[in-house]
Image (cartoon, rainbow, N blue to C red; front, side):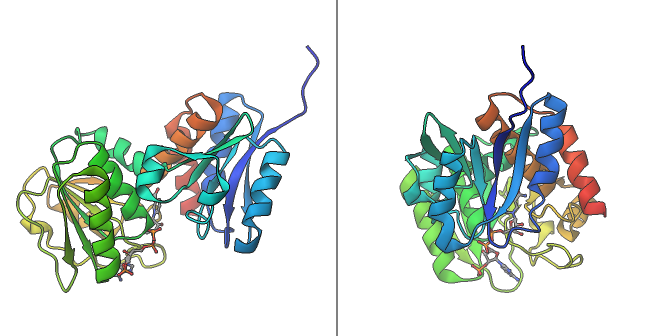
Length: 283
Ligand code: NDP
């Protein structure tokens, strides 16, 4: 058979996008899978998103990730949405198939896989700190996966209340909102505490998440969405108290794994992806 010099294209559209590390974890996975695929980090201004999507279709891209500020704006440009993307109201992964653009949201699913690797989510009582894009994806996926009860804790009232209402109305899982003022004390019945705000993101290495970890029961799970650095102060404090700490790098890798599976139909090796990211973050 003659050799093919053609690459299959995927990537991320964002603005700004230069600091997005996804390419560094996806391309080594493609190489290890023996796939001649490229993942491009592409700067797309908001007013040019529609042209960029048309361009991807015209060039037979296999799909793309969307990051800030395109996760909601891309929705009217798509052919259909997955049930999770509909419930979350945001798309971070688009699959192009037979000329159709299918919107998915892999952030929450990547998070779920991280938790489900240690404990089933069904029946868990969860507290989610934050009400932004990451918290929305996580809250909805927790509810869809069978969490018993969810509490959204957020600094600003409107966003927090809106998210609690969205989860309750789309999934029927009892969801309440608590305004975050001073230190938050989770109920002793909490099984899973998720830090889904941007507190602790590099370079803010010692930023404190104002939550009383001592009110959690032994064996409770504490998750952080912050991928860089993975060992945030919250992760260190949780480990010291004997709680089960799951870092944001796991979630980032898992959502990348799901994206690759959606685009290629094949499963990559997550350990290669995690190593690639760890070496980028260590630079
Ligand atoms: P958004 O800007 O949409 O939301 C930010 C959230 O953080 C809001 O709820 C905001 O509260 C809260 N917040 C920010 N600063 C503070 C503070 N000092 N005190 C209390 N609350 C605060 O961001 P995203 O949800 O998109 O992203 C959040 C984090 O998640 C980012 O750091 C991102 O890197 C990470 N992330 C990780 C992923 C992974 O795979 N590991 C995937 C996606 C995101 P308020 O509403 O009051 O402003």
